[in-house]
Length: 235
Image (cartoon, rainbow, N blue to C red; front, side, top):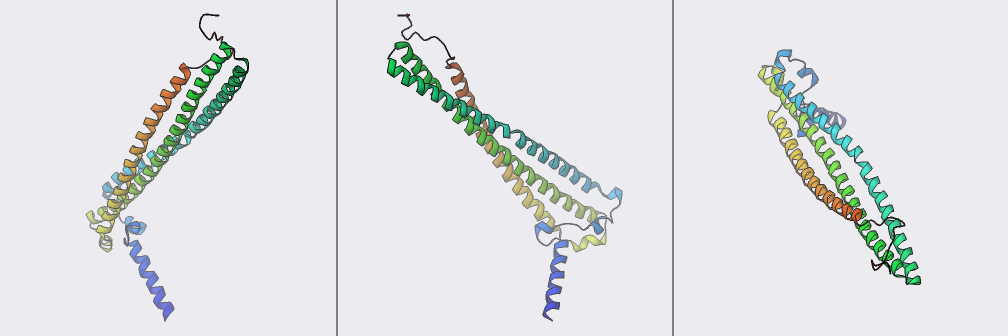
């Protein structure tokens, strides 16, 4: 008897899911949807267009995430270059301190300044790469939410089409649950989209900081083997 009761409970739970029990299960069965004629599919076609656009944006967001992985590699390369510059400056400083020659001391000073600027630029690049990656990941998350919204819209449109067509099967579904699913999906998407915009703004600001630091590093670059006079008089 207990097994029979448990089996009935499971069957009832499955029936509720089919009829929209809980917003995640607010779906129209294929059998009921198949009762619609081609001319009765207007609401569904429109919702499917939204879903198709959401899938396209999802694919673009994932592609941008993949393409952005190269930024982190370039940031690592900049860090290695900055490290090499610091080592070169340190070696020159030791040489200059031993010789005390003005030209060597001036070169050591210039190399130290250049290394410091390069390190700041490398750190700024790493920060930008991290923020850009976070923004792209968030964009993918927002695109996923948009797809979920599109799927909810399609299911609501199916039920509305059944109702408009006067098909009796529509009466076994709870319209409120379908509307609730769309409302919650819209809320989730809006929140994810706002977070994406916030993180993109942070990435843009970080990119500007990095580009400023990079230009400063390029302006202060000291070519290898560049003559250093120390006093500027040649004496």
